[in-house]
Image (cartoon, rainbow, N blue to C red):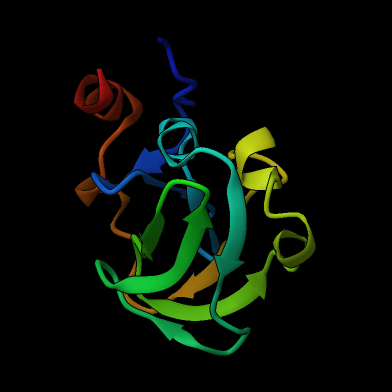
Length: 127
């Protein structure tokens, strides 16, 4: 099975993706991750103003198969939360790179995209 792995995104080995302009970064889970999880039924996310730390958990996604931690690719302050996921967690399955995004963060330590996997490396990891 082939999964969507957009070239413009960067990825964590734990299957989160990120993209941004340096001012803010948007974070979600990959197409591969949502497929592995199965039907997402609940998402627990931080609040606007909370701090997240690169490599540490920022939330939980619960599916009919499992409960999985979500890991942040960057450190910084949460500036936006996709509150639509609280009522419609299935958006994570339906559109993981679009309407299923989870949080936006204002990075405090530079973005550090070079430390994350590019699309080719991530695609190789999930192959």
